[in-house]
Length: 406
Image 1 (cartoon, rainbow, N blue to C red):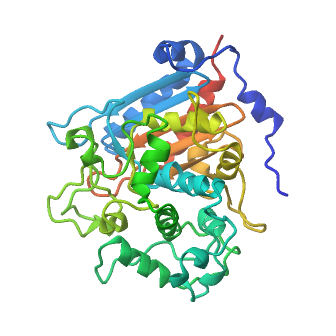
Image 2: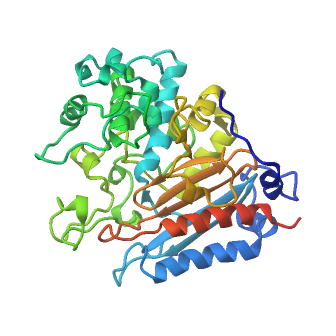
Image 3: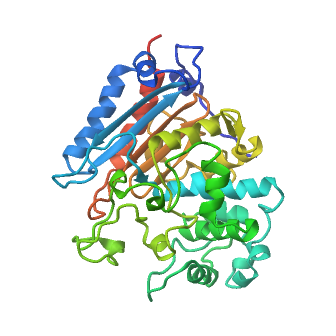
């Protein structure tokens, strides 16, 4: 069995000189942050994000850092580059893109596995016999969760199609490029199928299942699919704008059409806004509640959402032997996508995920530090690159929470 080693010097670097931290409830997190986080590193975080906003790398963002009851949260910039755009605040709702995979789909599958309704090592075709053939008979649920199914990265956009049923037929029509369990490729198809698996096994669409079993119990009040059914568009940061030069995969948008409260991912838009791969909208504050639940072994404020073993499966290495990219049954641990949000201080063994729209959740279970970054870096034309900012934020977040004075 592979082991993830935390080197002693990293553990020491992430030690904090305070104790007796309680939960956030009943305390002023901003005041606590002033005492428990390094002010110089917090200022560096603010500067890094503000410089990215000034350089038009992103219109706005929210950053949140937590450790053991202390929290630091700031909004930056505005929701767009329009003259009348409103400032981003901690209440701004963002398209969380592929964070959906780890705050909706994977935990939903694990809940059903806890109940004996899904066997993680069962072949996909046990649940979807229509997917047989093309080398897919050997794909297991575990392969889908760890992106080792051998399926392509995404569904084709052409010829034009619409609807969840059509997406399912396209996914089932795919052929594997590598033997399942032998190769890592990050694939939205894996999680499209997993979202559909939740529906088939539970009898409930994924968005309803996640709301009933995750967001409601955790009091993640601003989180869910199809946000325009709950909040006004003005509360949501826009993403893509049609008719922009270089809009790439999003050329299906009409000139001037603005995605605000409508999922940015084009495949999920074709599916009606709900899929296992993307579609959830949220706030940094809500995602922080999800992170706290994981650090507490699956429960928060006396409400259990996941079993401790499901948390372990979600957040520790579960990839097949011989696969260099290390992932849990959902969370990224040490794949090529993990290096930037992890930064240079958090150790291998910390975990999290990113989202294409400019989002990060990263958690270190040893130091119990985590940070959330939500942005709309894809506004208006999908061209901005904020990956260097990810590295800077990951490094500064660890330093800010580990260098505080008592």
